[in-house]
Length: 149
Length: 279
Image (cartoon, rainbow over all chains, first blue to last red; front, side):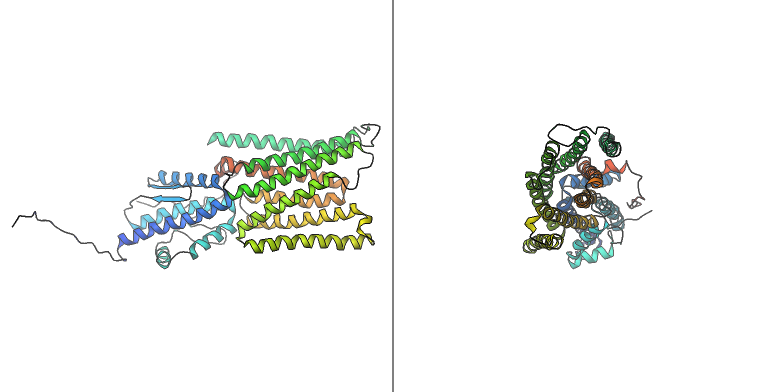
């Protein structure tokens, strides 16, 4: 026999309803949606405007102290938020900025179309997380979410 | 960032001032005709005609240069590059056509009904068709097959319309008045391209990318008008070319300096960005 150090083991539930799982889903949905939108924006507007957009998103995130970056068609989120509500709020702000800037260039009609196309391509799980923690909304005049003062 | 805004302001100020100057010169010549003296003994063209033609060429060149500048804002593998390659080539072909036509206008007593310039104008339409088709495909993701059918259909309608209008107006063989046939063809071609440009304008409405297409639409209509109303039409035509050039210039500046450089130039609309979360 040998002596083993005693450990305390904590078991975390891996259910989909756990907040950790939901946060992870939200990250993937947010980055996935934005990347699809930006990809289509790249096709229509070109790389120089996509780079300008990426710069704005990154700067806006940095200004809030978030580790979220956008470069080209890639959106990377390495931020750890205190709560999932904070996470959703941050995404709402950045998604709103993204859609507003795209709308400035392409106009509301195409922006809305891009958004609709992107959302129809989402899987059921991503749609559910988007409904639970909405960071995007389609309106008549704008394609993006975020609060309007 | 401030440097970009200053650059944009400087370039726009120069361009718009230049355009106003050209329009002023044209209107001065048009209404006062201060140089109503024949250029040479073998022609009835006057120095007023020379100046007005030069204004047209300068306006066309300005638009072509701006279209070319837009083209080079895209990388080789980008779809925008192929679209704007066609559009830029189209406008350069039209600029060459204007130069050739001016040559005939100021050196000949009677300008031939059909000249080599027409070959350049027609070639321009071919390139515009290619550019517009690529933009259409990019926007609406139409199948290649459907797009080819659409393009062929549109140009078939133009040719049929030309034949029908010609036979109605001439009454006899279209070959008896080739100049009229060509004018009808140009008018219908302009209207066709104008309709497509208008479609893109409406699609991009509210966005910065609307500007170049609105400019093309305006020029298409002005060109159609110019064909039938030469005297007043040429003023409208030149103004339309300059408006087009400004539209292209704005698009080039947008691509080069980014939308943020423009945001400072115009009064900002209500901020669309949501507020930061409270942590």
